[in-house]
Image (cartoon, rainbow, N blue to C red):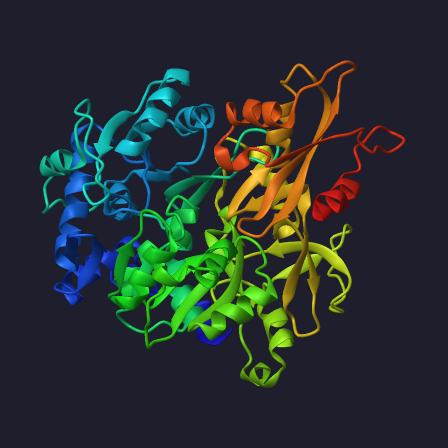
Length: 540
């Protein structure tokens, strides 16, 4: 052991050990990139010095209304500057950020408010009715609401709540940030889409988010001062942690409230160099009308995730000047943790073959441990590109666990790895490739939809005896829910009636787009054979 036996004086001190946190990036950027543009949205344009000051005001204002360290501050916001500022301002006062999916139904939002015990909520005016309906359904104390109007989108305040800018004005731009004493402290709370009933609360720590911001630029080969377009909703894994990353690089965030071909092409023509998005976004770009297209002379780097993109889509978008890289991850892993790391030798392959490789989920990001694919006995499957198993993940960018759900946490971490629930092949070169989705998750436009949740809504209809929901391929959304319904004797509802019934109980994207009335195929024990229904759905 030599001198290692005696490490007297070789201790952690404030000089040589600082807890890792993405908050450090903005504090540094306020000095290093003080006059560099940090955030752009319409006529809203702030430098890093101004961005830091506004985040400080938000932290100070939250403290002034009684938000304590460790308490939750929620948001119901699209990708606007307030959402970017919340990424830093909320944890800067010691609170935990809970960005809520704006597409959820009031009952689910109520559950999230209650489960996370939100002390306050920043709510876009468009989604204020959703927040108020959710509060009516809550069991616990309602969060304090701060309304965020959007002048750029022409959305004016209701006048019933304190507005965001007025709230910021009560804060101190010189507020001293409350940096974590321990990098394991909770930074954010994100809810899964809920594959078996209620969504689970995924808790992130500062260390994981910091390492995500360090690993992503290496994987994406990002330069200093990138121009980033916020297509990925910032309520999805905190926008894949990209808002926390941009200050480290002195990058500029271009906020995008509504994702349209016009918005994307306009932003790219204005200099945007990077964005992330689901395959539906790639299709939107490829199929954009002529009037939306704009010329540009630089390569735009794109991360895509949410569902494996079609090789034909990848081939088409590459010709337009977009360099697309497939990544994979989950809410429980802060977003993307595997990448299709491109080998230049593949450039010589036929286009179809190269596009097929580009659709793989790839290998682990540099801040993660190697990805494993296990069989049912917990052993590595052969790397033969044929055998399937469950994707297993391990590393610092895995969640702390599920809030108030130790049993689910223990189950997810059994064997020392996070069980993804996704089924994949393992190729000889180490690349993984998703072969199927466990638990019958439907991925529509990048949104995870629980078939169980949709089935539960259907079963509330008085005419429904049994039902099953599977994914139906869709040119625009990738997948949409397709319901197979076995009716009670004598019942004669129409497809439109069933769809309307579901739409009244579910978020719009979760509502079945087709309803097929038939007897459901079952095993001898009565289990519905969904694989048969998937085959039917593919032919519709």
